[in-house]
Amino acid sequence: MTWKTTAFGALLAAGIGFAALPAAAQAEKVAISMASGVNFVSSLVAHEKGFFKEQGIEADLKPVPRGNIAIEALASKSIQFGEVAHVTFFSAVTKGIPLVAVGVGSRGFTGKMVASNANADRKTLADFKGKRIGIQVGTGVHGVFQMLVKKAGLKETDFQIANVRVTDMPTAMASTGSFDAVVGWDPMMQRIVQAGNGKEVMSARDFEQQADITYPLILITTPDYMAAKPKVVQGVVNAYAKAHKFIRENQDASVRIYTDYIKKTGADLDEATLRVMMFEVDKFGGANFTDGDMRDMPGTVDFLAETGQIGSKPDLAKIVDRSFGEKAEAALK
Image (cartoon, rainbow, N blue to C red; front, side):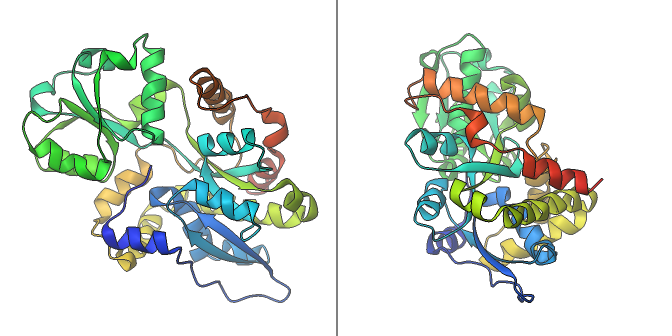
């Protein structure tokens, strides 16, 4: 799930990284592939507030538009850590790429359904049977939509699904009759509603609760790096944990940090929109894997295997190490 204006997209595509913080003596240099959109706020705050530096780490954050790019960079050893969606992670490890999850960068589903004004009284997926729904096929939002359809006892063929980019949805919904509803993410969904061209009928929280997901964005590294430098791994996860805590306790300051960064990219997004994107669901509940995350991940693996999106089910006990996040969060209490 991503969003970007032309300027922001160009920045991500170019792979422009942050200037590293001033290095302390013997600081460990690490490169972290930073997710796009609201998902990167944890690493952004950790960088801006000096939490990496406190851990003796000189962090170079590298924005990338897709998790697959981060995985390729990890495999080539050009970075040491990456932030990726759990689906992307599972797909990579089942293809034999050696990776391990050591913490949670952020979490929280951001997809929502906006109905046309003519269908604004409909509330559930079942209410939209036979209706034309726009969705960006192949995205994480599409995957959760498929999961929820299955949980509701429905089939995707019960709907008229049309593949449309989320960036094109505001224009499409402005044309009466194009779609009965769209499923996408902010800020485009907010723009449709603000323009008077639709009503939000299923929120991100609705999707989370009905699909029983937490949608973790996973912080990953390689098993070799984890074995060689466990103290560095712990330090990185500690910095993320401190960022999560800071964001929870300092929402206004965190929104300003995010807003300032977005303005530098040339994106036209106001603070109120960014606040919704950051806090409409629980994204910053800690860098450790929660019990909810540990329900979400095997459920997602089962769904991916059942639908043929992965060829085998990975053993989560071998690819998820909860110890770093647990130690990081315990140290903050």
